[in-house]
Length: 84
Image (cartoon, rainbow, N blue to C red; front, side, top):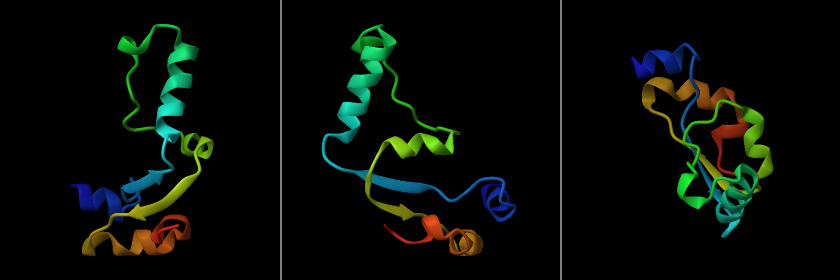
């Protein structure tokens, strides 16, 4: 089912994005301050459908994970086919 959704371009290949040291902590701190509920109530985002969301970070590099069945998708999307 997963490979079918990838081949149909319904979902993109998973990406591992490495951030600079402290970048995620700074993001979480700002989110906690903005939310006003305190650290114990903060939930880290897991899946974010907003593609512009990553623009707030400066990745050190990105690795796209793909299988033999889904190779063509990563190759077509130049932004994520290679590590940056």
